[in-house]
Image 1: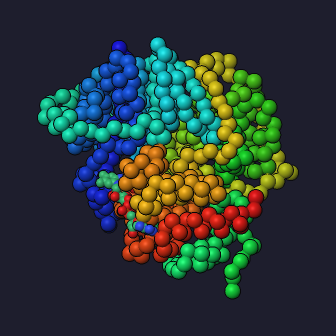
Image 2: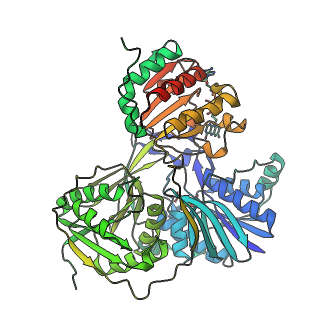
Length: 277
Length: 334
Ligand SMILES: Cc1cc2nc3c(=O)[nH]c(=O)nc-3n(C[C@H](O)[C@H](O)[C@H](O)COP(=O)(O)OP(=O)(O)OC[C@H]3O[C@@H](n4cnc5c(N)ncnc54)[C@H](O)[C@@H]3O)c2cc1C
Ligand SMILES: Nc1ncnc2c1ncn2[C@@H]1O[C@H](COP(=O)(O)O)[C@@H](O)[C@H]1O
């Protein structure tokens, strides 16, 4: 029986993003959430392993009370056990602190894991750091950006694409992977399953104290980085409007922007200005 | 001991992608800048086997000091080996700042190194500076580049960042420059890598992931049907780019899920983005925060995508696509 742990994060849905216009910060407390896309792929990879072998899936998230929703969704999809780590003390944790807390929870609740799956990155912070830092905390062999997993006994074989290299790696369990969005297309949730999952209790809620994390300790051991300011990026667009027959607009477009295009593609399309008045 | 009392800014010598990606040289150039402000030296780390070429290159591009380890055991990149080596060196020499290119390797490696050194790390920075209180100001994108965050590491050292390739300009090489080259022995207790590299292959064709593509051709429901949508690949191929898609297109099976751009899919940062027959719903544009230059083609000039474009072409998407492919074939010179 394989023991799998999937780390999930709830991220804000963009339609709902309530910006605080004055400070330029996100009112996360007001944003409706969804399961981070890459985490969905990680969960899908775990579910496919479970279909092939006998496996038990624990899903873990650290977040506000509302983050329970993504755990319920995961249960509906086929996860077996769900853990929510929820404590005001942990709000605003950076990846250093997040991986520390997740480690404490994994050690407490599923010390006998074989494989931990994370998403490659989150849609909000996009650091892609929590997975590797978790591997470091738990002292595990690990691979990031994994596209394909194969299991032979206690050996994990993974395929991935990094820096223009297509790699096949092997490591022994216990191990950790972060799953990219190239493969493992997430399945849809059946409505029935969702309703059932939202009905039962089934989600274990842990506070910081239950993980042996106390306020003064966390102050020293917690976040290393501090966000001083967040602001919306506003870029000025040229907004040139072109209208006419396809050949007229294409010619006009290419003549006007040939230099820009040449630079971007690393090949020259310059010089041949047919149809120019 | 050659321990230097001066503050030191370290640049990880990521040479594996040199010909596609000169991020180390870009970082050296920025390090020279930062070093002037905080009165530090610029130190490049070069590990591998037969690395003299890189020692020369980094010297010519601004390094004051090179920490070099040349050993057959380091022939290929290994996260675990490099971690042990740099952890050792950093604990011995206390660098003030470590800059690492946000290549795939760098982004897997840096978080683990930061954890070992018990310090902070900002990911994929698009700007660096020194604050009034002398800290490294780390400017990192979030929410698909729609937002930027200014981050500092106040108490812990080194201050670490990964930096997006292309963010800084390299300084022209100067082969008369001199650096202090320290050739160090490989540490005695180098750990064995628990991750075994079974096979690797450099893709000859510039095979990129859509997240890193510099040209992206996106198509939406306005492409009409699957066959017309497939033609987007011809344009992408001509431009050395990738194809992206909106959700209805993925759901209809015209494109793979891997091509989905937006909040449920990927965030992209191309230099040029073509957007064919896309309305510009916020769930899609959430992934476009860092597209430099956008060309939208849509029948409807009122579409949001047209309003946020640099060039808005009011026309039939498939007609423009066909003509553009034909015209580019005539013009492109290798
Ligand atoms: C929770 C949630 C998450 C979502 N996540 C994503 C996501 O990650 N990515 C995503 O893309 N969507 C996402 N969506 C869907 C999103 O809201 C839009 O429905 C989608 O982006 C629209 O795709 P479209 O522009 O291709 O289609 P449409 O909105 O139908 O637009 C088609 C456009 O094509 C134009 N057109 C039609 N015919 C032609 C022609 N012959 N020539 C030129 N132009 C033509 C039309 O004028 C129109 O502007 C999400 C939705 C939800 C609710
Ligand atoms: N708060 C969290 N709770 C559980 N898992 C998380 C959390 N934050 C990040 N992760 C995991 O780490 C991955 C990468 O996140 P990030 O480093 O934020 O880009 C996510 O896809 C999750 O698998």
